Length: 322
Ligand code: UDP
Ligand code: MG
Image (cartoon, rainbow, N blue to C red; front, side, top):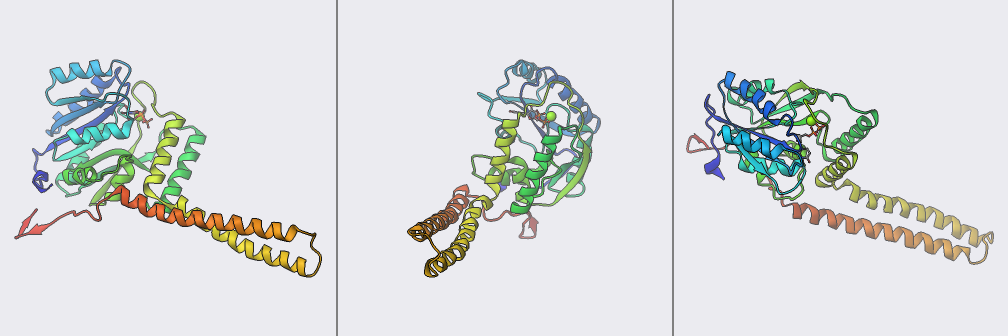
């Protein structure tokens, strides 16, 4: 891993822009032009890695033209629509830059911030520069509420605060390598970049309006992403079963005592005591056993994810920064 890490941060360090595109044919070329203009004005050396995530429109044709006339553009086409997360993985795998910016194809991530991000990486030594949403742009109320609950839950259970996080980020090469070193199959980019740590700086931006087309996130896709994120970052739902089992067991003791008391004092109906006691006992023991299985499952799930135990941010050896 070490030989690919380049710690030289110089004015001609290469910037890779990784852009996933799904049905963005109508404006992908003009978007790239806008971004490229800013890069040229600021004398940043760059390459584009644009991933067509199985679009059904003319995105790929547009990308072919673009890559044909501009050799700084690498176009990748996935065999079908794998979703933004997978498209990002493909893009990051093919990016060669010393720093990498991930952004959307619809200019909702203002490219004017790029020079500022690059400066924070080059001159201030940050490894990760994150775009933070000042406002979340226009959203439906229900959507806003769901997003709020989701972020709160993730923050409380996994200690990851993503409320204003966006997928607009600059990452140092070593952050990308660390991210690639996570072998899990289902990824949640925002969560994983929060998990890896490193020196980070946050830059606020207002979410711009989409240049063209419409959002690709249906309610179902968002729900799937949310479940993905929660199950990848927290095992709290599994522990809930154990807690429920314990609560039920306490209930069993209380209710059991009451039932027995009724029986002894002769107030109980014939046969009911046995039924109640059996119900309580079976119910609570099933819950507790499920909970125990849950705890083991949590362990297996953590092992299966196979995340590295730690990540190194800097190393000095023989008086040299590695
Ligand atoms: N995208 C993708 N695959 C998908 C859905 C979206 O690559 O299945 C890309 C899309 O082309 C865009 C980015 O992900 O560059 C963000 O998508 P969108 O603008 O639809 O989401 P929003 O900005 O509304 O969250
Ligand atoms: Mg968008």
